Image (cartoon, rainbow, N blue to C red):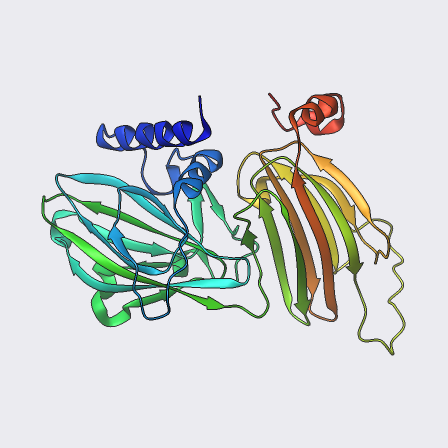
Length: 323
């Protein structure tokens, strides 16, 4: 079976599940990370002129990587719908309610969420996101056009919507904006490289790769005020008492607070360090006290089937299912 046909078949299964009311709504949706990225790879990326506005209908279950104007019109009651948006690592996403025709009194709603929900888990986690969970929603039925634009804190965002009446719907305009210091990223690709920098900010940032991968850390700089200051000495062994460190996590969901530690990096590193993680989701997470400029540069590639088989006997298998 060809890859293209598998993608189309998977998308058809998702649509049929939604039509039959089998997909659960909001935080308990049953969309898997792998299934969602099947939709991503089926979305065609186009090179467009700056003046051209890309337009297309929005599906009940959808995945979009492009800027443009997207319209959903219900042909019948659509009660469990979600559209996922993703940008490049250095982008954030704005979603504007351009036109809305729904009946809030009947139970219709359209909500923008700052992040993603997948199988009951949220990204970024509550620990890593800069605002409380309740403030990450923009509900049209509560704010109307008083708050027409919602802007994400990272390169992913989504819309939940429920519409009862045929012919009702909405239009949103999606734009992307450069983020000079990206934080909390989901990678669109299985292979690539990234440099994460946290400049004097008390925050946690993560880079999520929803594939089993090998990660090679090329550079890690922790606990330096600037080039003229001596590195901070750490008296507590491990990272338990350190305010600045990097951890490599593995798991089968997207919530970093529910993932398992694969490795802790508590000190600066000049040479390369490699590790293979056979989980559905691999995360590089940096914790920063805000006192220093912390930086980690790494590259990653997908594991081949033979590599996955080889690492079945190591400790990663204790918490990650490997086929």
